[in-house]
Length: 267
Image (cartoon, rainbow, N blue to C red; front, side, top):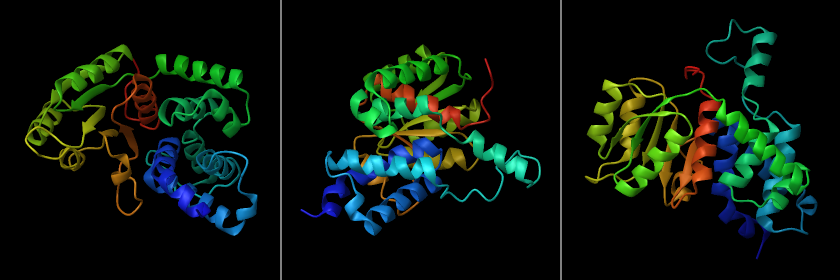
């Protein structure tokens, strides 16, 4: 089996990690593209002494840590002017700190502390310390009002518990597209958790599109088939959770989505 064939099944999940790490589809996919180009240009340098997935993420981490490949020439909305200082501040605000990287690699991507340590050049004990630091930081994070779009009662209840345990407030639980849009209009959320397939065969994606057409809000999609939404061929979710999910995965995704959102109100 060729190296490309070995890596192909892992690419959707690397895209998920890259987007969560950078806070955008565009920037995340740019780093993934750069990592793949590096592998193509120098296949002999690809780590062969580890699992292909681990080697793929290691190559990505090297690119992430050494090269600015995202299109960062323009300052983000809210910065004053286009001077170098404001652009630098905007870039700095998008950098995911090392503790967050450790949390995403373990909680979202499922790497062991040992493997995560290999990826970020730390030992397992250091990874555990970094994850604990990230979780401690999350406890102090800005609070948000969260709309849950989920038609399975048990899953909706589980999500509601996780959200409340993090100190956020649930504005409501919607089970259809129309209900989701109506609830968002009546009480504007600061975060949306959305299932893909809803009770009346409507789409959570369509519900989110309707909501985003009226105002901007960070969104985390939840699906049993993440690879279908992570092809890199069209506008896709920045934050994505795989069903069945771990509570730690949901917490990490919520924390990271709010980390990049400047509209949340401090508690």
